[in-house]
Amino acid sequence: MSLSCGYVLGMSNMSESTEKGRRLPAGRKADLAAYVAAAGQVTVGDLAARFGVSIDTVRRDLDQLDREGVLVRTHGGAVSVQEGERNDRELDVRLRMHPAEKEKIARVAAGLVENGSVIMLNGGTTTIAVARALRDHRDLTIATNNLRIPSEVSPKAFRDLYIFGGAVRSITQATTGPVAFTMTPGGLEVEIRCDLALIAVGGVAESGYSTSNLGDGAMMSEMIQRATRTAILADSSKFGRRLFAQVAPLDGVDYLISDLMPEPDLAAALQQAGVTILTPESATTAR
Image 1: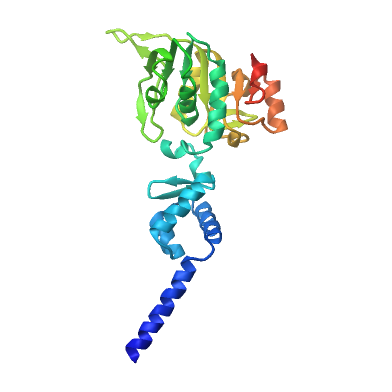
Image 2 (image 1 turned 45 degrees about the vertical axis):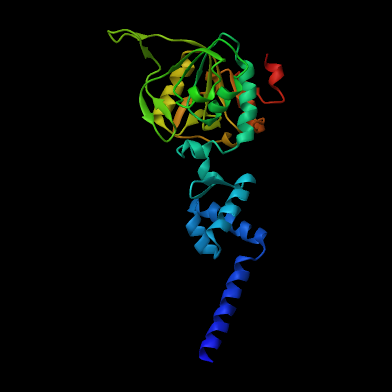
C-alpha cells in the first residue's frame, strides 16, 4: 500500500510538472524573452532548468523568438537584442541583428558605387552586406580591413582586392593598423587614395560618428581622409548613440545611408553639416 501511494503521489507530481511545462506556450515564451532581456546572455541548459522544460523545448522557443526578432540565437543559448547590438559581440551574432535594415542600406550604398572605381570598406556586418550587393558591378578596386569581404563579394565584381595588414581582431574578423601597403623590398609605403569610402559606424549623434574600439576608429578616420567621397552606413538603431572612439565630425563625410530618416533634431544637424541623408525611399534624389 505504501508503494502504491508513493507511486500515485509520484505520478501526481509528474503530472503537475508536465502541466507546468505544457502551460500556454505564448506565456512561457513571453517569460523566457523577458528573462533573456534582463540577463543579457543565457544558455539553453539554464533556461531549461529555470522553466522546467526540456532542452529541445527551449531550443524551439529560442528559434521562434529569434525569427520574430525578439532575441538573437547563439550556439548553445541566446543573447538579448541589446547585448547583440554591442560592437564587441562576435561577428556571427551581429550578422543576425537587423538583417533587413542592413540589406536596404547595402542596396542604397551599392547605388553610389560606379563601375571601375576604387572603394574602401571597413570592418563590420553592414559592409559585408554591401559587398554582397556589389555582385552586378564590374572592374572595381576594393581595399578593406574586413577579412570576410573576399568570401562575400562576387569575383566578377572586382579587378583587384586588397586587405590592409595589421593586428587581427578575431571577434570582428577585421584588422587594425595603418591604411597603407608596403609594396617594395625596402619597405616603402605606397600612398593610396579611393573614390568612395563606405564606413559602417556604431553611433551617429550630433557630436559626430563613433565606434566602440579605438583602433577601429583610427582606421576608419584614415579611410575617410583618403577618400574623395565618404558615405557613413548606420541603421536607425545607431541614431543618438555616442561611443568611445570618435571617427569623424558630422561635416566630415558626404552621405549618411540608413534604413530610416533620423529624428528631426539629428536630421537638421546633418543637413546643416552638408550631409546628404539617403534612405531606400530618398536614394534617387542623391544622384
